[in-house]
Image 1 (cartoon, one colour):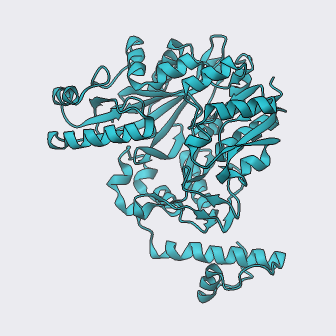
Image 2 (tube, rainbow, N blue to C red):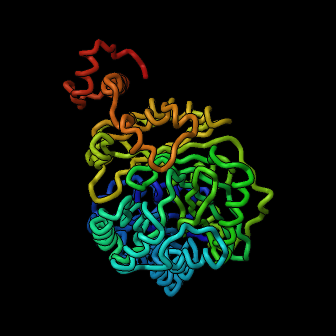
Length: 498
């Protein structure tokens, strides 16, 4: 086993990996930009190295700076987390050349599956179901011809894409040219590559993904599926495991297909094979993410397996000690991504200082976060504050537990999507599993808070600060805080405990 691991990331995933390493008895090394000097991952790591200015292109994305920090610290391995360099095959290759273990798949596997066109060809060779579309990247003229041939609506997708970037849904011929330009422009900006491909759009699709884990001794297993259909701007917001929309037969078949794809590229470590599924449970290969996923905790909650620890163990050469039929599901898990953003304003980020934070807790409640009172949410990075995860014996139990946890979650100083998440949990269509990837767009009322919701966070905030001040006799607190003032106007007693 490794003695020291460097985490080439920031935020909640860096904290998550640091905790996993500590539980394995491994020393940890953090890296940080100017904007992250006081971040939790820096405070929790055994060592921390400064790698540059706030912009990722000058810090977290500079391979040479990460390698230099690893060498200075004596780290034997690097865990990339997700985002940044996690799916950068040249970084994985550089680690190997420098004698540092990359905790993830081989550079070759990353390269093969990182390009959406190549990945589709591999899936096709493995006889995996695919959505009809272009065979590869296309010119503007070719794209138009393909769209006409397969019929509208179609999706334009960046070949090097991910996270919803460089993606456009085109419903008719008149809009095709302008949306193609937009997709190329966004792809160029996000990935430095404006190549795109075209495929048929599946109406009312679900986004289902299979968690894969594989060792370096030839064993590839799946850890069942996750339902990731609740999305905004093609980015996941709420995930759950298992999916309540698929049969045991579909689950088994989808898992077998995912294992087949991973085996085709001699995969190693944790990864995710993503599918879109129609209303008749026909599913089609979408892409493979060669890294840990944001939503991995829901899989951990229903299987009892620590995916991050297994990534580290596999990278250290350990064999998976169990077989596919030894892996079982128990109960139901939900994850809500808590963002500093304004759902009413098209989910625009809301940077600022977190004046006060109160995280929910209790049996079956897990919060993977990096925040604390006084933490600054900057405009340089993704505004996700945390991942709130719950486990229940049934889906209904999990929904009720998530509602309770969200109502306890207090963040002051920035706008958040907590109210929006509560409204989704309470929505009858969500409860009845009547949704697809267009759920948020179909129900715009989910974006608007009620008058009651507008008051409750202020009341809770006033009570929280009043209680904290009373307990700590904090003389430096602001006596005329807007939170306290609002609570007093509403006649709330400071003796009322949250």
